Image 1: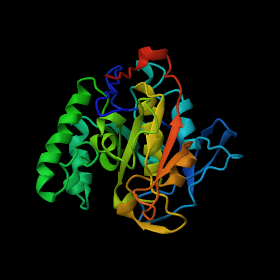
Image 2: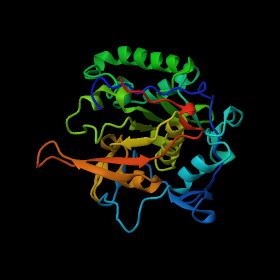
Image 3: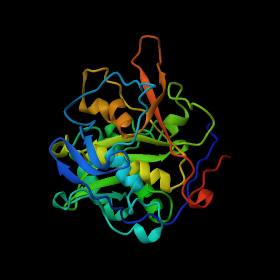
Image 4: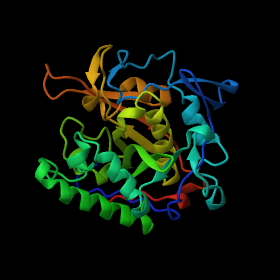
Length: 307
């Protein structure tokens, strides 16, 4: 894929939200699974917790990655956003008692996201512009410009383009965010030498998670990842990619894991496709992928174009 490649995904107008029903139990979410019949546990450690621990990040050939129950529920459930407009009207939520919904970023949900980003840290000035605006998110002085830029993307999503990301709401308050979209819409990826394309196929990318401090460790990131997979699939993505941190069994600060961890993605069904390094001694930069296959309904449910 060259810098000139465009990936344009078109589909029906973005729904207000999509529904997922799961039951929250100690240590994980319990929900419908294609592997165990009635369901099974999924580890819901959030990549943006205060510290995170991960394994080596390698996929064992004899034990291929498979979707976690959370991801399987989103992709296989009746309200996964893949079966037609009539099934995409209700909120995606966990156990009703938690009031957790995953909704697209639109002008209507923008203020809630702004409150989340306003908690502090990099989101307060970056506004998720780092990957999408090359060279434009390098200082706190540009915070207002970045905010206006993200609001503009939200407005484009309301007009029919895919939303630039998904927001997790609990009782109307934003508690999490995931940025997902065509790889070609992220200039820093397009021009990256370390994360250069693996091949010339158009892919979608997941590049960033933000989770409210009070919600870390409660499965918000896991649920956002599952919803991002369904969101990309519905908009015609055949291949989904991400660039998580491989902690190597150690601990990393929350701010260093905003792209997620290798373990988190493997549990969701992704596989490590490549490990890159800027120099022989620099930290590894894994690239994980999930080959989603043709979108339901063929090419009519979404379009990826090169040009």
